[in-house]
Amino acid sequence: MRVLGINALFHDPSACLVVDGRVVAAAEEERFSRRKHGKRPLPFSAWELPGTAAAWCLTQAGLRPQDLDYVAYSYDPGLSESAEELGLHDPWDHLRQRYAREAPSFLASALPGLNQEKVRFVPHHVAHAASAVFAAPGAATGSVLVLDGRGEATSHLAGRRVGTELHTLASQRLPHSLGLFYEDLTAHLGFLRSSDEFKVMALASHGSPRMAAELRRRVYSTEDGGFRTTGVDWTEFAPPRGADEPWTQAHADVASSAQLVLEDVLLDLARWLHGQTGDDLLTMAGGTALNCVANSRIAREGPFSRVWVQPAAGDAGTALGAALYLTAVDGIDPEPMAGADLGRGWSDAELEAWLKTAAVPYERSDDVAESVAEALAGNQIVAWFQGRSEFGPRALGHRSLLAHPGHSGNLERLNDVKGREQFRPVAPMVLADRAAEIFSGGPFPSPYMLFVHDTAPEWRDRIPAVVHVDGTARIQTVDPAADPRLAAMLRGFERRTGLPVVVNTSLNTAGRPMVDDPRDALECFGSAPVDLLALGPFVVRRGRMFAGDR
Image 1 (cartoon, rainbow, N blue to C red):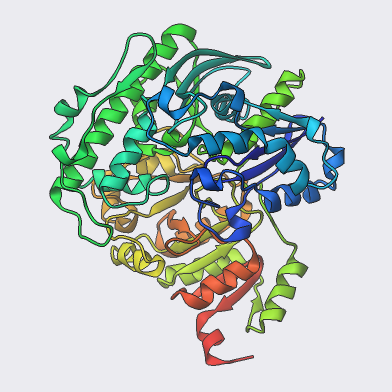
Image 2 (image 1 turned 90 degrees about the vertical axis):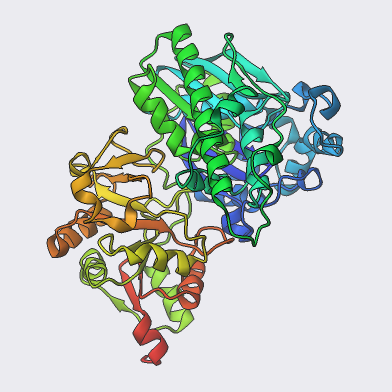
């Protein structure tokens, strides 16, 4: 059975191909169009489809549109209600709904040969839920919690998987939405709504939750597995910040307060869900599940013994979930997600052809992991381009910027390279068998960088570049069996420095999507002060490139 999942209506348009229950390919349109998030989540852009990503997914499997059994679209306009009925101020939402109803026709035009009768609408939060509970390892039975800005008429789903069935146990009707609550604060603090919520989470660590008690009067859980988000006027808590204005302590404090209240409500929802199911496993998806600080509290203080978050937890992941859901409805048990490296990749010969076309000086390393470890030990910044690109917002050792964690100045240095705000942290990657020596307070393994861990006091001065102001770190554990080259680089770095940790942040600059193809990597390397590019087995050194040595 061949199912192509499509996410298109709001933001992060994406496509995912599932064949006989196995995820074959998944990609976000931004990686092809080079437009951050693919588009803005406006009614006027709701018609835009991930056409290039979808065509690539099919090509990857050697399929044509007419070979598909279904196309799963991750929104069901039949469940939607008017913005007025839902209590939302969105005067053009009727246009969005019209585009959703016409999606089968639009898809048939975008994928010539597709019979539009094969298009199926999958409810938005069902798609989110399926992306987690049908993709998680060891999840034949498990609970699922979904929270985001909005779907058709709700902002939340609590459910349970039993075999190939997904049962909804609770949902929260709009306008109450934890995602919109956080989005509104994001905009109030001068950041980009539906894009920069992670900056609010980072800023929260610089503040005190002194306003949490007042916020709890307006944002709280209910006894039926739902919640309320009513009447939050952010100007009562802190003045609005312009995008180019410096943040103040009041801004950090309101971020800290909102973060704490969000975590408290999520914990209540997790406890209610566990009371209904008694499951050991909680899976999570929806944009709110990208809040790694909240995820860690759920894992640490919640009733579930295991918490798994789908790495493309935002709307991009609904393409995955829609495809998995239709697969399960057909009676096929989906295979667990083996990893997030579901995007494009190139052979060594293809990578070398790109380098020759670019006419840059390069060398084929006898051991690229050792070459990179040597450069990092010498405090160079390395662009690491290996294997297939990641599906989701995190760089996980396929399209990464790497640096030495032992120099505190490397945080500012990397933020300068990327053009980012200086309050934002960078993350460590660590060998899986060494992680527990250095980090605690979060789940292991943590391969998708979706939890924060406490850094052991004796290690904080040894790896200061990756320790956030509150002593935590958003770690990625590296399994040598899953990524032997990345593990070899970490081992080589440890032999030279005594540190089994390397700084890992996404290979891009501010406002741009993560690097995806070799051209993107070369353009980023040429325009940013990066010392070495490791492109597969090939090494390009900045000194040689700009010295004109051919």
